[in-house]
Image (cartoon, rainbow, N blue to C red):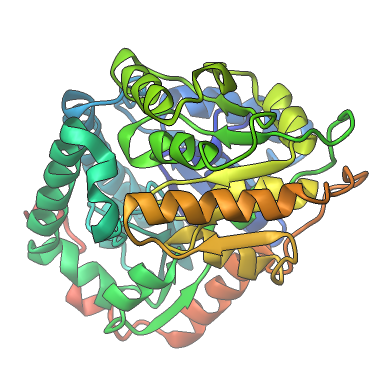
Length: 415
């Protein structure tokens, strides 16, 4: 087949979202010829990698601007990111139509960033569409909204308003019926898109399978939290959980942390009386983070609306026990690994009760430390194979839905 892959994020070594785009590209290339649309700086990284892998003859990298702004937290950064993504999708639509007129694609795949309510530029191409994995329907548990803090609540309100306003536009809603195959990251998004045709769940996190386990020391009696420290990641909730654990258990947080969130974490530590046991390490190179997770006693994920959670997938691959909220992406990741004995999913209730339950789950798993994994485990659900199967289903479904979307430049920029 001739495949058009729209991957706003697609590059090696740049984080979880670009890794998803990269794995989708490499998976498609195992069988098909692929044209990939991505940001200019990522296109520069892709070209030498594909050459080294001997794939340059079947991979055509097309740079589309503008580049996304550097990742920051806060409402201003959120607005800048949305504007940049909107501009990029419009440019990608123009590029996709031009390429389709020349190449005549058999299937189009929109992979990153794929929130169901955001613009899908390549949907204008008159070829069967695979959409996703898409997310974006997950909400924080109502009982834990106070964990976000004032600024976090404001950011979440803006996010909710943007999502609802965007989804109300006909050009957004029509993509769900236009797509022959919809891949949803989690059950919440699958329910939101249940009126679409072929909807299946595929977590982005399964794309981040580790090739090998890093060298790690003996398993430690400690807790690791991994990820950029922002309000919805709910690190203060992890700190409250630490207060229910013995005094010899430390909490290590690996991820960039701004002044505002650091102040909230410090305040939570003071209230719980665990100031000396909370260690904010800031941004740490990926290889070092993986090595530390591989030897940590437990990975704790207190995130309030994690769509997929590559962090959980990596911990499971490394054999590290996991405690997370039974909400959103983590249950899907655990299921993709065929379940796991050393995983505890905690039902979110109130902050106090949830913190106690998280602490109890961590304490249980630390009671008998798991052996350090010698080899990386792989999920039972194969991300690349699922995408290849989706392409086949999309083409087999036919083109009955294509008339519902504009395929001319006049139709590109509908609201």
